[in-house]
Image (cartoon, rainbow, N blue to C red):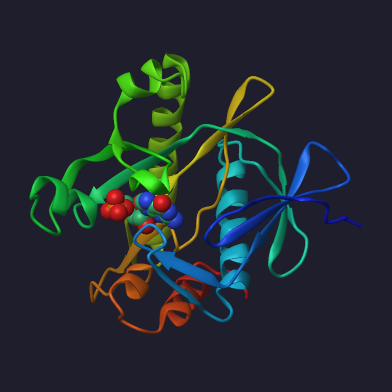
Length: 237
Ligand code: 5GP
């Protein structure tokens, strides 16, 4: 029986609690949904459960394919047990197709397909609007080492190959996504989550968005779209 201890942190969609084991934490997926650095918020019924199950499916698949993750097991419909990590304060983003912030930032044409996946680092800081940073900033401010930078890039790109395949096999395109890493016992391990809250997924045939862009752009059927993706991937909710 896992005991829910002190609240460690409350993010925009998840809360993290201590457990009776100091090396393991309880991650609670809430229905809360936010966009634009928390400026737009809404609770979407059922999203916490879908994201918890979605994330477990992806993390287990990545673990099986050589990417170590913090995921241990799902404990309830909305809670999972994870290894405690010392998180690096950076977001690793990979883009296969141009949309979102890169189009606004660089005037790139929407829908441009990158010949090679494009990797970007962002600083995890809501007050600053998660600014784009590069390797030199990470070294200069001691957010990570050169070796850690190389490992994060390598792992994020392996994750891209692994995930593009399972999405593509069921008629979906993984357009872009964000992942975060942490340290444990001298290793760099995938932390946080992989859910439709932090990636873009398009239907191959129709080009329809089936991710949090539905919330950002007021397209409706947000949870229903997450459910469609989960169903296609064989995740039972
Ligand atoms: P963009 O830079 O275009 O806003 O986002 C690129 C990708 O990373 C998208 O799939 C987006 O959902 C994800 N992403 C970027 N920043 C965040 C963040 O702070 N939280 C979450 N959940 N996803 C993010």
